[in-house]
Length: 234
Length: 299
Ligand SMILES: Nc1ncnc2c1ncn2[C@@H]1O[C@H](COP(=O)(O)OP(=O)(O)O)[C@@H](O)[C@H]1O
Ligand SMILES: [Mg+2]
Image (cartoon, rainbow over all chains, first blue to last red; front, top):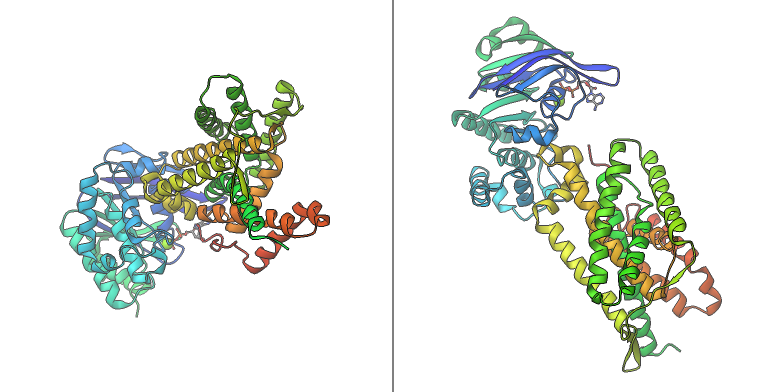
């Protein structure tokens, strides 16, 4: 589904991601964990076509997308739920969801999917005409995930969906992630909360200062002493 | 001292002037919202709209409405062209670079007009009847005044509906709020920017026609002052916010008319100074304009 080979991304002279290779197979839930500043967000932004790629190749469904414009990458079935949620605060909840389906032309299907999102997150239905800027952090995260789902993605990328949220809401969001995975959605999940991410994921990559430090099955990485020491200590 | 009729008359004049400022301010504010570009060439598109209107009016048999509609379409496309040629290559450049470029575009358009039609002002002659005065209960207004207000309000309602409900309209508001997030949604920014330039330029063309009709004259530099004041209007209302541009336009129109209408004639000459003083005062109280939102929450 997704293959990345030797990806290097540089902001000015600073290489935020260096020679990263990773792949995600159809239906898999793969997670990228790593400390703040490791290059996780930059990797996702590069996949979406909004980060300055210096070298490397990104292939989606067998076709190279490395230099494509972001809207062309969305057209390939990639949805990106960005770090910090980035919901449109001056748009209503409903308008945010409609925007998630921006490239879709099947009006009836879109309306159906909006109802599905409301069923998934009933809080959003209650607030459908409210400006997204007035929602709580947890509600905004639900909206951001719902908005990403509205494109009916083949690959869903989630960047730190648990960031700054109360444990109860984190649980709710992760149960939705599990549910989506069970439904067969391919997911690339970025998390600082490594324990949580490794529990839901099939496979994982550990990123350290822009490079892949470790990779493997999530179950094995949870027990890896190095990982335990660096990321699961508490 | 001021009779009710006089007051009503001033209100009518204020709505009239405000409608034109609002029409011009909309284009400035949409483009600024998307690109952080202060488009100094906007007033010149207004001027081009007036000239094209005049050309069509002199071709006797063109129906009045078409002399408005055709400039809207043509100038809309001219705006799109200007964006393609002059502004798109600068996407992501510092704001100052874009600003200087728009000054250059403005100067190129004005000088091209001077070379081709001379700087000599020309009479903007309307078909008989359009300037006809109507007097109701001592208040007088012309058919042109009715056209100005009626058309402006209609266009602004249409634009508001489009921005509020259409797919592109929602995308435009999203892109103005956070360009990067909008791109992640699959919005083609170039398309949204193109639509923005088309709409803004078309409205400027209408304003140019109405402005020329009101003052019965066109000249290549006629867009400068209205353009500048419309920018003030957009800033007063909250730059980047479309209802703000409309509100700012009307506020400015009223302020100008009332300043001249209700203060001793000795003050009239300071009308433009007053406009800018008003801007400073409003910005002191509300730094982001009346309906504005705090700047740069965008990524
Ligand atoms: N827009 C940017 N401009 C310059 N440097 C950036 C930018 N975004 C991220 N960086 C830098 O790139 C590195 C990786 O950041 P990021 O991808 O956000 O890491 P993570 O998501 O793992 O916390 C950091 O050192 C960060 O400071
Ligand atoms: Mg990050």
